[in-house]
Length: 384
Length: 180
Picture 1 (spheres, chains in turn purple, orange):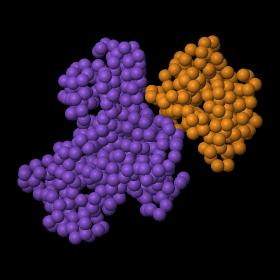
Picture 2: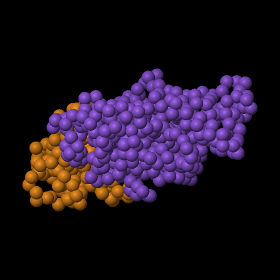
Picture 3: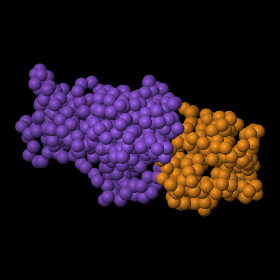
Picture 4: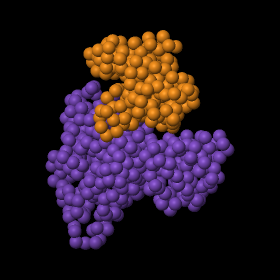
C-alpha cells in the first residue's frame, strides 16, 4: 500500500475504500472503530493506511465497542486531530450518547453510517435507509445535525471530504449516510491532485487566549476551538455552559442560550451548508430521493419522460439540515412530488410539511433492494 | 457497446467476486468503458452462496443493479437454479461442467467449460478455476479485451501468483476459441 495521503488517479474502487481515501485526502489522522458489516472495509483500509503515512503520526485504534470508539474520536479531536469513526445502524444506536456529547462540546468529527437492514441486528449485508431520522434525532435534547447522502463510490470520496470540511468549519459532528449497496459497490473513482482538493481546518485561538474571559464556545459564528496541549486551559463540559465553557446547571436562561447558540451555529448558516440537486425546472412531477436510491430515480425519470410524463428529479445532497425552503419552492413549480426511499417513508412527513402540492410515496417492492424502474413508472402514470 | 449485464455466481471461496472485480477494472482502466460491480454474499466467508454482478457499457451507467443478465457464469447448480429465471431471453450461459448440472431450458446459449478440472488437473490448483472461467467468458463474449484483462490480472492478483493466474486465464481463452 502506498504511503501518500492522496492516491491521485483513476481507480475502480469500492465505495467503502473511496470513503476511507476521502478521509485521508481531507486530512484525517485518527480513526477509532469497531468492526461491523457492511462498514468494516473502511476500518481495514484506514488501519493499514493511517500508520503507514509518510512523515505523519496517523493512528487507528480498534476499540472494545462503538461507545468507546466515538469517545476516542472526541478525545482525539480535542488534541487537534481530524478524527472519524465508521459503523452501521446498530453502532449508531450505541453512539447516540456521545453524538450528543460531540454536539454539546462543539467537537468536530465525522461519523460514517453504512446502513444495513434493521431493526435490531437485522441483515448485515443488505442495504436499507433505516437510519435517516435516527442520525437526526437519535440523541436526547434539542440540537442540529449535518448529514450528507452520497449515491456512488465517487461521491463517497467527495462527500467524506465535505463532511470533514463541514465538521471543521462548524465544530460539529457530521454524518456520511452511506449504505451496504453503495458501500460495497465498485465504480470508477477519480482522485484529484492534492492541490485541487479544497480542505478546511478548524480555527484555534491566537496566543494570549484567556479562557476566563475569551469566547471558546457558543458563538453563532463558531468560536475558535481551544484544543488541548496548547496551554489554553479551557474547561470542556457536556453540561450546560457559558461562552467561556463554564458550567451553569441551575439557570433556565443559560440552557436557553446553550441550545439556541448551538442551533444558530448551524441554522444561521443553512444556506452555505444545504446542497440540493434540482432537475425539476420543466417537470410536472418531481421525484425526490437521496443516497443510492437517487440513481433509480434518475433512471425512472428518464423512462417516464420517454412515455410522455414530464418528470424531474430533486435530491437533497445534505439530508440534514433538511432543505425545507428548497422543497417549498420546488413544490410551487410542480403538480406533485413522488418521494422514493428504501424504507417505509422516513422523510415523507418532512416533505409534506413543506410542500404546497400533493406528496406521494413509493418504497421498493422488496425492501433492501433498489426500486424496480417499471413499478416507479407505473406509479408516476397513476399520479399524472 | 450497449449496457451489458454479467452475473458470476457460485459459493464463497470460488473467487466469483474477484472475477467480477477484474472484469470491471479491465473495462474502465484499460478499455475506457464504464463499469459497476456489485456483490451479494451470505454471512459466512466461505461456502455460502456468493454472486458478483458486473455492468459494462460505453455510456455512463445510472441504474446500478443487474436485473436481467445478458451473460451468466455458474459455478454451482444451486446458483444456476436460483438465477436462471432472471436471465435475459437468449442470454449466454456458461457452466462449470464439473460442478453444474446443465439446464434443459433451450432459450439460452449454453456453453460448458470444465473450469475446475482444468485448474485442478492441468495446473494443480483448483483455486484458479475462476481465472479459467474468466478467460473463457471474455474470449467467448468479447466483453473486455483479452490484453486489458491480462494486464489487470497481472496488476491485481497476489505477488508470486501472476503466472499461475495468467496460465489459467489463457487455458480458458483457448477453450473458448475451440468452441466458438
